[in-house]
Picture 1 (cartoon, rainbow, N blue to C red):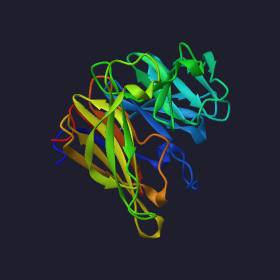
Picture 2 (picture 1 turned 180 degrees about the horizontal axis):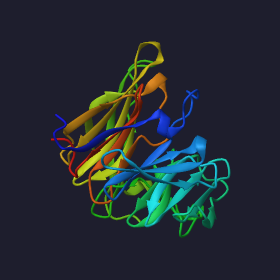
Picture 3 (picture 1 turned 120 degrees about the horizontal axis):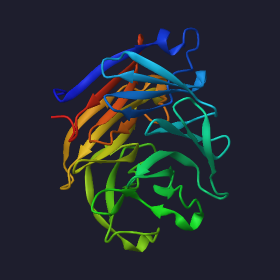
Picture 4 (picture 1 turned 30 degrees about the vertical axis):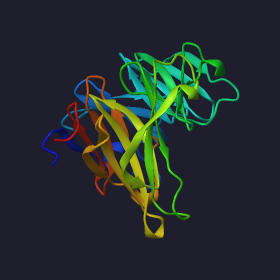
Length: 278
């Protein structure tokens, strides 16, 4: 079922510098032209890896970083401890630091939103960093045609039970966060403990769904959901020890996605072409 995978390789723990440090490892990844960037936060660096898994080089990370986005020859880093975003060049020098506004909900990551850098929050809204004020919060995640979407959970049938999810979509392009302009599109055909909208891959919505199983183990699925709210493709992702990186899946600017999983030998990175797994 993974015949559209363009690359799959393992970056060894030796290369990651993790021998004897079982709690370390990449916290996030971003697509590069023909490869990926892995945020090795414990070692304060980004590892640049080509499509065959060969290490191309490193970029120093000058902040305590939780997430990254590739920007031309450099990177943007989200620093949770300092509540800021640092813009860093290819040599690791900080060119600009953008503080996040007081009162902003807990942030979940960095995204490129219609070409602009933005942070996302636990409430499925986003804040573009050109105008980082609470008044500029925009509800939902971009999902095509200038509109924004959310994935919302139904009430569980019983405590701890799996639950269904529904898609809400803006009725018109949104400049702000007016929830009254969202409409219920319909139920998405899966049940999970939690789900998060990653973004748009071609015409499909990319969704991460977590299922908590016996003993607290987590099974994670990456889903491609069509505009007709059908699941076209799905991939199981390994979540070691019930925990996952800050960002396990990254959308690629030219279409497609990359994801990483932890193995005994290192971090396995897989990349697909635009449009999901066929």
